[in-house]
Structure formats: C-alpha cells, structure tokens
Amino acid sequence: MMGRTIFIDPGRCIGCQACVSACRECDSHRGKSMIHLDYPDEGRSVASLPTVCMHCEDPVAPCAEVCPADAILVTPDGVVQQADTTRCIGCANCVNACPFGVPKIDLQAKLQMKCNLCYDRTAYGLAPMCATVCPTGALFYGTVEELRAERPGVQVADSFTFGTTTVSTGVAMVVPADKVQWPVPGGLPVVEINGKDVR
Image (cartoon, rainbow, N blue to C red; front, top):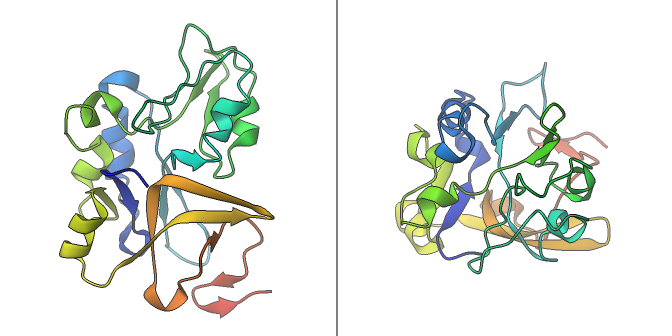
C-alpha cells in the first residue's frame, strides 16, 4: 500500500455523488469523471460504492502490462497514470485486464480514461478531489496511521483474490472487523448481500 493513499469505506458511502462531480472538475480531465459510483444491490438496496483505480502493485498494474502502445505509466511512488493521449490507441486491452473494472474507453476520442489519484494534486501534497469533498469520509486520503487515529480499530485490506490470482493494491478498502479474511475475495460471484447468504 502506498504511504498516502485513498481508503475506500463502503459503509460510509451515501451515494450523494459529490465525488463524481468533484472528479469532473479535476484539471487533468476536466468535464469527465474518473470515479464511478456503483450500486451493488440495485433495486433492493440504496447501498452505493465509489469505485476508483486501485493502483495495483503486485502484479504491477495489469492495465499497463497489457498496453501494446506503452501508454500507461506507473510513477516511482506507485500511481498508475491514465493513458498518455499521444500514445493510447483505444484498443481496450486495459479495460479487459483490470480485475476491478476501472478503466473506461472513450470511443469518440479512442482513449482510455481512469483515476490517476489526482496526481496533479497529490504530487504536491494535496488530497484528491473526490476525498476532499466526500461528506461522510467514505473516501479518506492519508496514511493508514491517520485513518486509524481517526477511526480506532478500523481494518483495511489491500490484497484481493480473483480466482487463483491475488492482487496487492496501492489503494485500500475498509472491511468490517468481523469479516476480515486475507486476502479479501474480489469480483464475482456474490455470495453475501447485506449479511444474507445468497449462494
């Protein structure tokens, strides 16, 4: 996990979309939001979940690894950048490689778009736009020590399994203390919704 990073706390998300609106205002992609608000149990629950790039560390950024144009770079501090507009060919390999479903393709521009941790801000010590405006702290920017000082006893996960592959990430997710399992299972199938086994 990166030193200062985003911690996603799904239990605090109220679906207000302030993060989505703030992301649209970020200077590096003005007008387009790189954060997605997902509704995991749409139609039955108002539960929402902010989805940002997890900035995969091991394996190093699957999206960048499969890019034939070498358009996705990883900074020395672990931030996986969005595609370089001068190199991206819009092939969508990155979309298919991401286990978290984060990159999106702008078909008109033939360009990959994804969260870059507001690198134009975080490189200078400022918080990403989404975390700055989140009214509930569902998106927290800081160190794990700062998070635990504010929320004693909180558990975080930065390793997720997809089938037989474990992915370690630079961004972490807050997980319920009584449900801690390392690594955290990622992706489908859904086996539990709101505490009920649905297998």
